[in-house]
Every structure is written in structure tokens, then in C-alpha cells.
Image (cartoon, rainbow, N blue to C red; front, side):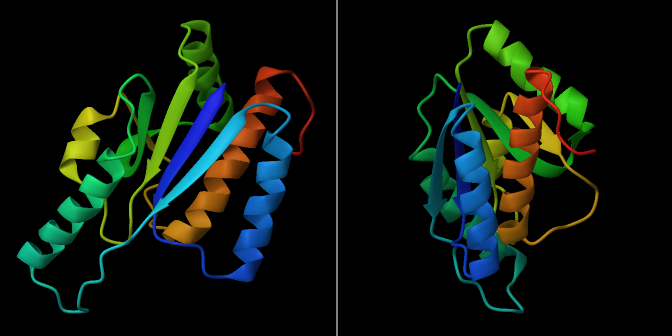
Length: 159
């Protein structure tokens, strides 16, 4: 299985980099992982709705430039289906059974995801109705992907 994560913005905190490195290492036994960071658009604190839409559109164009077309595109959105960890694992396993060997997860920036990405996604997934910092969320996503592979293989992992 090939897993790609396309994320808006760079990781700035060392402790998050260490956590990402750890899960990247763990995942190497289960899949080929590629992480792509796209530049986030800087917007003023009091940006108008038009400025926000434009920034999301620019970030969306950057994300689209990395999409291959044959992958399962999974957008991570607050207003999407929420799955527990076993259901998340089953979804990944079902894609593999269907011969879909490439899943690309997209994490938007602080102002959200482009509607074009959302429309194109075959899988819309939410981890919670809560908002998380996108840098921290990247760690959470890697942990859940790792947990999913452990579940798929019937291996023990803490609950």
C-alpha cells in the first residue's frame, strides 16, 4: 500500500517533528509513505471573506498539482463522516481489497480546504467536530494510519 499525505504548511515545532519521525519509522513496515508539504497562504488576521476564499483557492491549486488521478483521494474535513479506529482500518483494508494501492490524504491549512479538493475526494473523513492545529493533526493522522495497519494485521497495539 502507498500512502501519501499532502498537507498545507510546514511543521515548525521540534516535538511534532520527532513524533512524525517516529510514526514514519513505524509505518515503514506496513506501507510506503510520502509526505508532501505545500506552502500555506498568508492572510491578514482580519481578512475579508473574499481574501479567505482566494487563499483557499491558491492552496487548493498547490494541492491539485500533486494529485495523480488514480489514487483514492481522502479529504480530512470537520463536516464529514466520523469513524472509529476499527472502521477507519476497515476502510483502508477495503480499498486494498479492491486493488486500490494508493491513498492520498489531504490536510488543509488553517482556513480550510478548497471546494475543488472536497468535490474530488472519494472519501471525506472527520476525526472530530473539534478543530485541531493542522500541524498536530498530521501526527494524529499518522498515528491512526499506523493503528489501522496494526488492526488490519491483527497485531496488538494499545487501546
